[in-house]
View (cartoon, rainbow, N blue to C red):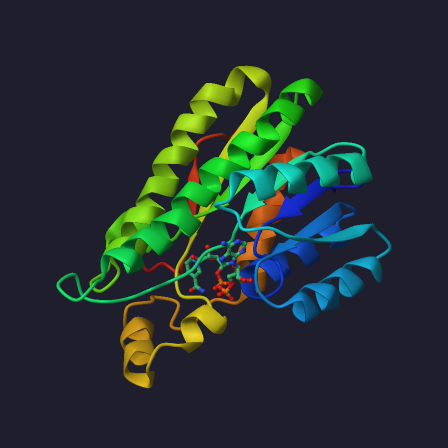
Length: 246
Ligand code: NAD
């Protein structure tokens, strides 16, 4: 499905990003594993990708740092001979009720989760314009659609990502660069592991399918958006949430 394509997945050393990186590689894409945290985990993902018979690159870069991101994109393009797919997956949470949320908690989340998408998108655009083709997939969240108490920073960022998806889709459509988003619901990863048992039960109560999602559930939809099967779709946000928000 993606044979010969090259992809960058941000925040790919674990969780949803890791699953996306492996899914794209399983379809024949060469994949760059961007990471900001543990190099060891990123290295493991690189080895898993190589076992699938495609090329992998491990690249440390903070998605919100323009010079690091530019350097990353340059390296990927040189090593893989082009760049066809960007998955903006990196994200953090700093949850707190509005009255207790510190300014730096707001800024950190907006920086990584929203500015990071802008910076990475801008960095790949020139190369994709040259190739007259590209697929950009942003990992938003269902809370960016529905809101969520205790996550003013995160919700504002994810709602911003949905808006950025639409506006970049409109701006880049004439260059055949397609931009879509996925909005996962409650997916079992390190990020959701931080929640209390009571919070987890509360989430399960509002999911019609009655179970948490797996990183692979998100990865398969991203694979569809990265492939030619979605060539007449742009500016869309697909909910992957067990029916939570409809
Ligand atoms: P995770 O915490 O397991 O993974 C996030 C990854 O992003 C980590 O590898 C981390 O190192 C990386 N990262 C953080 N800051 C970075 C930066 N500045 N530069 C580069 N990489 C950075 O979380 P996850 O659950 O796998 O989340 C992945 C994405 O999915 C995030 O955007 C998250 O907001 C979104 N999401 C998750 C859920 C869920 O239920 N888990 C639901 C909706 C949306």
